[in-house]
Amino acid sequence: MKGSLLSTVSLVVLGLACSENAAVQPTPPNFPLCASNGVPFTGPLCAIAVPGAAVVSGAKGWADTSTGDYYFDDQSNQAVDVISLQTYKYVGRITGFVGAATGASGGTITYGGGTTTSNGQGPNSIVPTVAGKIWVTDGNTTVKVVTVGSLSIDTSISTAVAACDGGTATTHFCGRNNEMTWDPQDKIVLVETPNPLSLTYCQANPATCATAAAISPENTGTLPSYATFISAVAPYPILGRISFTDVEGTTEAPVWDPELKRFLLPVPTCSGTTGATACASGSATQYIAVIDPNNLATYAGVYSAATAGAYLIPSCASLGATGQTGMINDLSFDEVDQTIIMPACGHEVVVNAMTGAVLNNSVVQQVGSSDETTFNPADSNFYVVGTIPVGQTNAGRVALGQISGKTGLWIQNTINVGGKDPTAYKTSDRVLTFVTPSVAQVAAPSTDTTACAGYGYAGIGCIVVFGK
Image 1 (cartoon, one colour):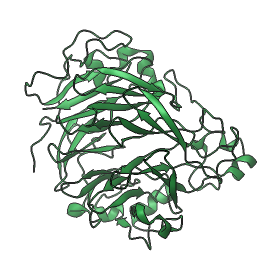
Image 2 (cartoon, one colour):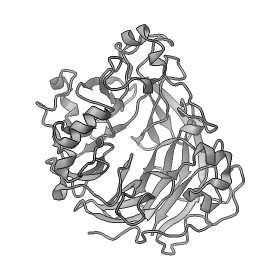
Image 3 (tube, one colour):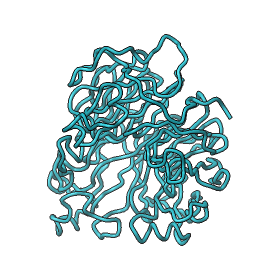
Image 4 (cartoon, one colour):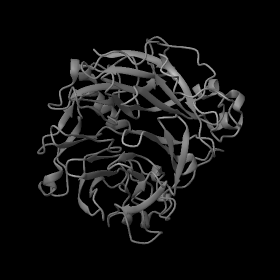
């Protein structure tokens, strides 16, 4: 087992921030930068704030080794924020995205119903391709190609299909594009559309289709999630699509395995009360789709777990998670050890990427299910953010969990109140998580108990940097 990035289970957050000149309201105090002159440290190091509206809604972060930047899907500001990982300062913002489903002052922002600016929240996911370029998924079934240096969107690509899109602003029900990854060998980007709604159904039932969330997986208004394969070479033609007819809920974050030369994409089949019960009891099995991007025609537009060699995920009962339910979620990949991590059954599960076998045939019980996950090659560990389960030390608190990529075994938790979605930066042995306050905490900053408050950023949110 490699060395640990973090070695404390819980600690008092100190009043440090990464940038003394980040333009936020209220103005943050003068605190040292994250780069601490090479002095060893352990646990949370500092925090970074961003300008504009309080960040109550964020989707994903990504560290880009080609540019030395961290990108953050800042839905509250309808943008991707850029932070330098050389200086740990806020650099700028890429605007032109749909924004959040919930405003900072409360209330739902309608994102269904077929308007050009409100059909699914965004930005949602990020992947760097060639140096200086990132692809970002957005609402309205679009993916944006961005030049980071100019903080500008170059191209917007639609992945809409006729079954959910009538071709006009008021007949578009395909929803958001969400997770994505790319195959650098063949220069192919995979983009997921997880919540498309039937055009025919929504035209007949406009009130029911007012928001995507109004349609349950069992409702006839829901179409299967689908993946679109796009050439990463301009003019970015669409190469093909695959739908997942047995999905319940949404397909989740895929990864590219360069050794297998396959995309690995998690497909939940246990959403809703009935589905979750079936998954827990063993009468339903979720799976990881194993997709060959160079033979898309062999799938005939539909992925079949029975015939395409998918990795079947054991039921929660089989994994030893007694009484637990929960869909599988976003993957992260350890290329060195050929393992992948994914949330399942309310916990974390590490799987052999070559065979689909669960390491140690069990789930990690010490930290709860994470939305996003990340792998840090500097210490060969996975990192997740989840609630510590009942029966464990610090039960009920949110923590950054550390799990071995080699063995799949838990190493430690570090408290990270309000934290979400970790991102590892390979070259500096750092892990970043963004922290979002509640709408109530924005209105009354003195009530903010998140990790940001300890750094002087009460009621506005921030990005917390962990390291050693």
